[in-house]
Image (tube, rainbow, N blue to C red; front, top):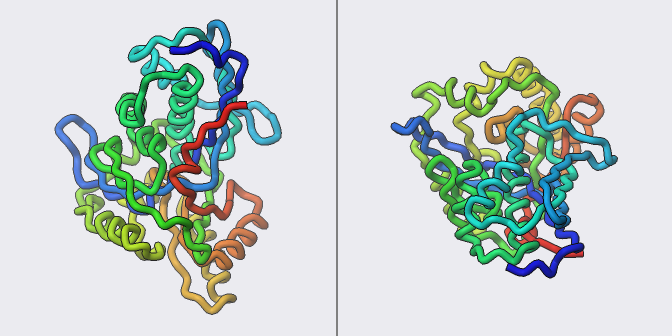
Length: 320
C-alpha cells in the first residue's frame, strides 16, 4: 500500500437509496428476515471528504450551511466501517472524514449506510488498498445490511437480509417523464426504528417476491416505473409504530391528488420508503413538482423532488 497520497482530499457522493419494492418474505432461524427488493440510487446525496493524517479517526457531520449535525447514536456507522476495514487491512495512519448531510437522518433512505459505503470507497482510493468491488461488498455486509447496495449503486436487486446484491440493467439515461417525490414528516421516530418495524410485522405483511420479480423484468426491458409497480411490506406496520405518520400520509396524498387533478392525471397513493418515516411517490415530473410546492408551503419536515442516477454517478470518487 502506498502512502504517496498524503495531503490529497478524496471526495465522493453518498447517494440516497430508494426501495421501489421492499418485500419481507418471512423470518429466518437466525432472527433476521429474508427480503426481496429492487432499489435505485437517487440524486439526493451526502458528500464525504477524506483527508489522510498521521493518526487518529475524526468524523464530523455538518449540514449544507456548515452547522454541526448531531447523529443520535453511540455507534457511528462510519467508525464501525473503519473498524471492519481495519480488521481486514490495518490502515497505515488516520484520517479526518467530513460529511455534508443532505439526506434526512433516520429517514428510511439509507443515509447512514450510504455514508459508510462512501467511506469504504474513499479509503480504498486514499490508501491504494488491494480490494476489489466484491471485496468491499463483503466487508460492507459486516457493517450493515444496506451497505452492499450502497457500495454497488442502483438499480440493483437485493436479497437475503438485504446484503446480497445483483446489479440490474439500467437505461442509458432515466426518462425525464417521471420523478420521485419524497416527504419526510416531522414526527418522533422510535429508538431502534427498523427493529421495531420488523417486530411489528404480521404474517399478513409477508409477501412472495412477485412484485420484485416484476420490477426486475420492467427495468430489464427499459420500461417506465409507476407507483402501481411499487410495494412495501412495512406500509401497514408503520401506521401503528410511528405516531403522526397517518396524518402526514393524508396530507401528502391530498397534495398529490390536487396536483394530479390540475394536470388531468390520476392520483396515486404515497408509500413508505424503506422503514420510513419518509414517504414517496413515483409521479410524472410536472405533478411531482406541483405537489412538492404545496407540501413546502406547509413548512413541515423535508420535501424534495428527486431522480434516479446511474451506478457510475452514485459511486464515483475524485481527488483534489
